Length: 91
View (cartoon, rainbow, N blue to C red):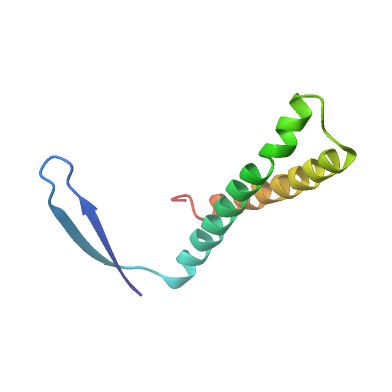
């Protein structure tokens, strides 16, 4: 598979284009890692209100339960990501 990328030279402002051939199998871990990173960010953003309530001493049982669910999911995702990173060290 041919991958095209562009980089901006910050000194000159020029755009430099490159092309390279990559193995499609090598791309799959990178895609999953990006999906995991996106989900971890979503969990972080979603947990702000419940965390604020916890710090303020106003958290409900539902807040604490939801935080536990999100933390369990995040831990599983971080573990999966670590395994993928070992397979694809450029991630």
